[in-house]
Image (cartoon, rainbow, N blue to C red; front, side):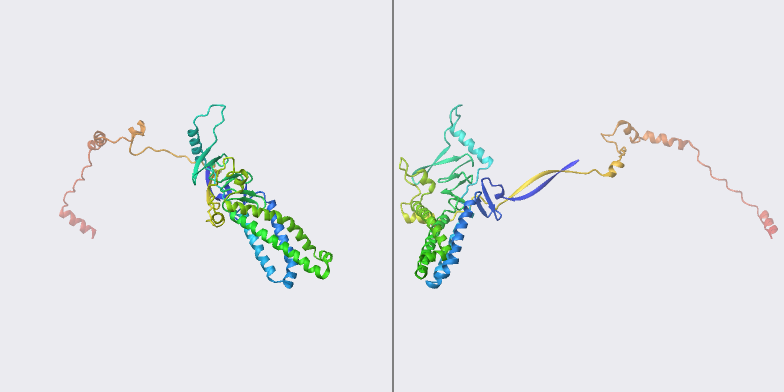
Length: 388
């Protein structure tokens, strides 16, 4: 014999989320699975700053100003904070439709398109909405089973639909979207300033040392400075160029994805419905707008029920001494009592009682013993005299 045991297990929602993301710290940290380039970014920033603090800062603090290393430290921590905030946060991933919701959407689409003849391609799944007197198309995502909101797109690397999708950046190890774009922009801007700052004071350090010991001897004495100059020179152009490009996008309130696809500069010359036609207003909306909450609820609880059969061992006493039950007829007959038993326990009638009492009535009752005759006084006196 076996019984079914129901076990209850409490899980977090991030453990069951689809997509190609990794989570740490009980769902608080969310990143893409491909994190190799992100570790390279950390190594370059930390390594270059460590060389600068070790070789240039002591000399520059003495010969120029102690504020130079202090400002470098502040800038370094700001770069690291914005990088980690961009890499570890939810970029604006949209939850996928539940099975019931997906079925309902499919029924709506079939009802709107009608029956498509065999061999013909069904019409594209598109909905039109109006934003600032401009028609914007909402495309259907076959992976997430939803109509994507305006400016959202599906990331093929993370396998998620991201709201206000900008691009997937391998250098930060995450998508850049609605919830972390401002931190990404601040990261590129501060990293550009830090690279220029280190590169400039590396040159100053070499020039000051060359005055006393010559240029060649200075290069031999400071190999760390030479390595920093090489790294900063090749990094400077890409980082500063990236910052300038995103500054241009922020001023137009446009995303990288929209700029590459030419969404607002195609043949029809459709205007951007999200732009305020003012650089300051666009910058304030992108960089200073409200912070939207995550739509995933990664740390919410899920209860999972599991059914497992549990065998019940048979008792030894029951096998050796099986219990037998003996049925007895009820004292009061009912509809389930057999006829032969009913006759034996049927109630006695008045005739049966008289038959049982008739022998007792015919039997003679015992007669009373005869009373003795009265004694003679003379005989009684004679007996008493003989006795004495």
